[in-house]
Amino acid sequence: MMGTSHSASGLLVGVSLAAALGSHPADLFVCAAVGAGAALLPDLDEPGSTVGRSLGVVTAGLSRLLRSASRATYRATGTPYELREDRDGGHRHLTHTVPAVLTFGALWWGVASLGAVGLAVAVFALAALGLACVLRPFGRSAVQGAGVLGVVVATAAVLFGSSPWLVGLTVAVGSLTHILGDWLTRSGVPLAWPLTHRGKRWWMFRSPVAFRTGQSRVEDAIRWCCLAGAPVVGMFTLVAA
Image (cartoon, rainbow, N blue to C red; front, side, top):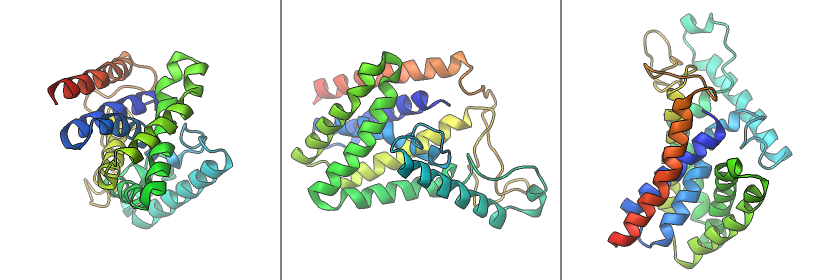
């Protein structure tokens, strides 16, 4: 799926988590924004992705490092049967696994646990990234406002005491949402790793009705339904509170 679709799905998942587990109405906005950014994290293995280009040379370098780590892990853990295939094990491999999802969540929980500054940095980084991607279809001025919105969301997280564990959980679930979104596409994702399925540890699972990334009305429908559903969940939660 495209970055805008991933961030939209993360937005909906984030606000849904806050509706179920949040302790303050501000968590609806915090988790929605964090989820939108977290849903882009698995693509850190691709320097040309939205998240790979987000901080210039910093994230580009991190992306190249993760891609190299993914290739090395593929070669080290792949079965003889699959290593004979013409695959480099880079994009959509290591960072698109369940262990990676848990790692992303743990890392961001750790950052958010470092007092008010850590919480603010964690929320701002993910919120600015995710909201910029969500707002991209609405024009450049909307994207430029994502940084300001990120500051507002991070400030709300600190003022109203958003829980670091909730931030970490939102990151993990948002990252998982990305992987499940890619499961809907023809390329698939290695959901079983490090277990073996049909003689492969890197078996690419895909939906029976998989579509081509960026070239499907199904993906467009998913994106717009998520964008429409997120405020509905938020409003319903606020009214019911």
